[in-house]
Length: 330
Ligand code: KG4
Image 1 (cartoon, protein in one colour):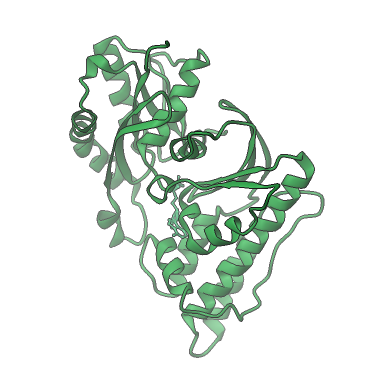
Image 2: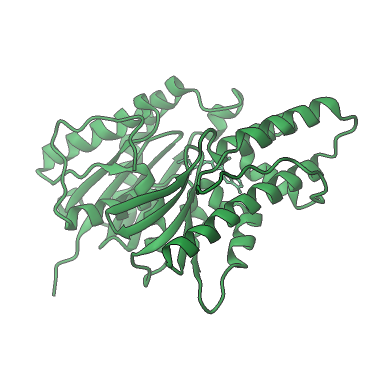
C-alpha cells in the first residue's frame, strides 16, 4: 500500500491568510482561513499594502493552528505548497517566503501552486470520484474562463474574459447600488428579492468561447445614473440573469465542441446561489455537474494543498528560488 502524503497548503494571494493540511489530495485534515474582509471593508476594496502587513501578522499563527487542528507535527508533513501566483505581489510573497523557509528548515520538498489550479482542485475535495478529463467553468474575482482539465496538471483554456473578471463585475454592480465590499454575496442576497425585468446587454463573440462583462457593467452604471427610483433588487436580479445566460450559453457550446459531458464550476463566484441553481439545472442523464462545497469556493489553502499534491505526484517541484508571479497564467 502506498504511504499517505500530507501536504501543507499556504494561501496568501489576496485578503485571506489560510493554511491547510490535506491527505492524498482529497481529504481535508484542517483548513484555517483568517479573512481580512472586515479590515478592507472600510476602503471599499482590498488595499494591497494593508493585505501584506496583515498576512505577515497572521501567517505563523494560522500555520500553527492548521497543524494543531490536523493533529500533525511539521515533521510528518511531506510537501509544502504555497500559492505563488496570480495575486497581489506583496501578499503572495508572504506565503512564498514562509513556505520556502519552512521547507528549507525542515528539509521538505517545496511545490509552488498556481492559485487558478487550486480553485479547480476544490472540486476534488468535495467529490471523491471526480477525475479528469472534465470541463471547468472558473468564475472568480480575478479570472473568468472555461477550462478543459485534461489531467490533474494539464489544462487547455477554451475561452476567457476579454476584459473584467465576473467577480469584478459583481463587486462593481454592488458598489453602484450602494452595497459594501465584497459585493458579490450581497448582490446574490438582494437579487433573490427582485424580478429580472431590466434588459441589459448580453455579449457574445462569434466562433469564440470568450466572455466580456464590461458592456453590462457600463450599462448598469448608466441605468443607475439615468433612472429615478431604481429598484435595486430588480437591477441585481437582471444582472445575475443575463450574466448567467452568457455563462451557460458558452458552457453548452464547450460541451458540444469537446464532447465532454462532465462539468465542474470553481472560484468565488461559484458560491452564487442563482448561478449554482441554473448550472445544476443543466444536469441530466448525459451531463454530470460538480460544484465545490460553499466554503471551498472562495480562497482557502485546502484547495492549494490538493493542487500541490497532484503536482508533487507528477514529479513537479520548486527550488528555493521560487518567486511570486502576480500575473501567473494557467
Ligand atoms: O475566488 P475568490 O475568493 O478570489 C479570487 O481568487 O479571485 O473570488 C472572490 C470574488 C469576489 O469578487 C466576490 O464578490 C465573489 O467572488 N463572490 C460572489 C459570491 N461570493 C463571493 N459573487 C457572487 N455571489 C456570491 N455568493
